[in-house]
Image (cartoon, rainbow, N blue to C red; front, side, top):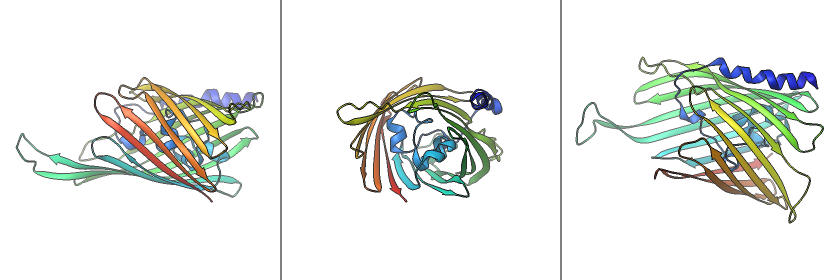
Length: 297
């Protein structure tokens, strides 16, 4: 027990592994309809195959599944992903592929009525995750990611590492703690310009009480995210699951300049589940919609 708690205390010191200005927004945007609807407070939650993104240690409690999704972001930005979780060699494994496209970028060297060219920007992240149990109630995981960014005719490539811990408190049924550190790595220069990856730290708590209200199960989540040399924000989320079929979700984020309320739902039918999240932005930036589809193997 003391050794396990010590791991959770020491682990956040990895937070200071990187600093500096950051790029690659794809690595900072939460993926999946479930996580987005719950205020991105899901580092200690049950994220299925998407634990490869939120916290690789969470793969140990995930079912074998394939998840893919699409999101319409702001200003002609869209991204897609696909993730898979499976067990082999007494461990849990995950695969993740993320693709972000930014279309209709206008290229100018000075103020002109028409741009010199219109081009697109692409970001691709491919990850391999590994997780195993350290004890009956604690697990650890890691994700190795290969990253590619193409801007105009210039390309940058690199690699990064994510690390995670997940702890179930034996004294309190349904209570879980987790911490993870992400994007520890580097990119090659893009047109002689260096880009620091958006290294970040997440920590959070999840509680699934045994008490049911109106025949529904409930899950309460809270979490904090620190992006190095940038913003720190927190989130909370509540999920109500009725008859293992319909999930209603609502969340709130504090500390983000343009985001606050989030909401969504999930519908499960046999081996299939559809998750949707609605995330509005202030300052007339518009609203975003995120969809993900889960298929149990």
